[in-house]
Structures are given as C-alpha cells and as structure tokens.
View 1 (cartoon, rainbow, N blue to C red):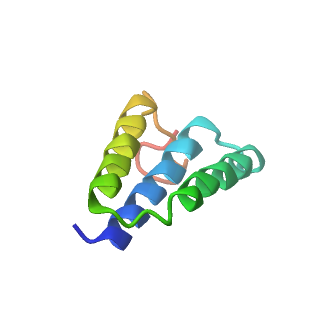
View 2: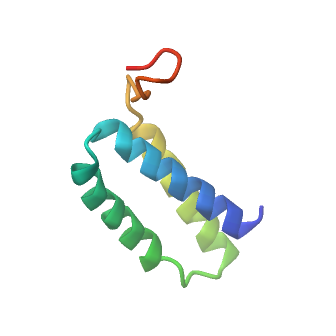
Length: 80
C-alpha cells in the first residue's frame, strides 16, 4: 500500500464524514482543523507496523462514526 495516497484517502473520508454530521460550514471548519491536527500529530510515523495500526484505527473510527443518513447536496440526485 502506498502510504501517501492511503493517508490522503482516509483524510478525505474523515472530512466528508464530519461534513455529514455538521452540515454548516462554520461548524464543520472547526472539526476539519481538529482532524488535521490529529493527522499532523502522526505524520512522523515511519514504521510500517505502526502505520498499519494507525490505518486500522482510522478505518474503525470511520465505521463507528458513519452517519445513518449522509448529507447529499440538494442539487445531486437523491439530494437531502
């Protein structure tokens, strides 16, 4: 697994998931900054075993916090 694309994918998914819970951008922005700080805190990790553990932890949290009715923009098909 390529590390940079995997981290970028998880980061984007975290941001999109947080937007499902806080639709208003002014509320979401604070959450986005917090998520970025969590990723920045672990950017020094180079050990593959630790990276895999962090990836798995992030995947588990994404599944745990998955929104039952995700936000879909009103202009999209099936929009909220």
